[in-house]
Length: 135
Length: 263
Image (tube, rainbow over all chains, first blue to last red; front, side, top):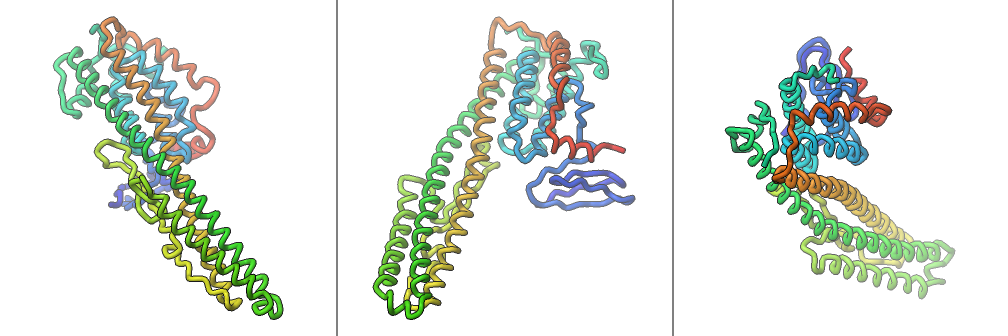
């Protein structure tokens, strides 16, 4: 079954290794096949990955886009080790993220990573930390 | 258990989604631990499947390479026979030698039939007979990698019975073999690619297993006293150095992400 995506005017979307930019009207795309698909709103730039869990999201995103995701595994697991040993509750999210990665479902892994970021934001907020300036 | 799990509303929602809504942080601890244990069990099952199927894929790869070698041997006979037949009065002059080539070719095809049949002995799936191997990436079997086999018997490859009585029919045999080699190489490449995929997933799964074990030990340890809230701040400081000197993304992904930047 094809994936249906509605694009807003001038919205960008990455399909495979190509970036499509919508013109000035709304567009509906029907996409079949197995290729990375990322909408502009789901993309995290490296500059914005300022917290540990945002870095996790960023690395999963890179794995999703990479022809050889294995290149990212050492960095990803290093980060996982740091976060999980410091914040035990994140183990739940990592278990779910990793199971999606093993299945090759990077999009679902990114969805779980968004929940991980929300969890992190709540912990930071409860600790009175401003995320834009954690130090 | 003295872990201080921070029960965020996000965590509460996640736990509800997986079937259990906790009433307290201590309750959340237990649910997370149960989930980790179950993930660990699933991971073990998937890993065990990878091991068995990798063994089959590697065996099929070796046998496909053997098939290619046999086809090349048969191809060699067609070239030898063609070279002799191409000479003036060659078919007559080298009749015995060309006939030897035809016999050798025929014997090679018989060995090919035996090899393909033997490749499936004591295995559930024979990829060289066109059967399909399905490798599970999850316990439920919703996510699988299917390796589609190809029939590499002479009949499956469309190789005709040898007829080395004319240059034209010798050329036909040569073309049959060349087509057969193309198909066998296709299967070899598909198997190699799937082996690489499975090895990458297996490695990821193995490391995941070790972290699940670590999490399980930590969450069930009576002496653990880490607090989510207290630990996150030093962790953020430590993570500042994580990619301080170099980008986390490799160049290709950096370029892709750059093009998606909001103008």
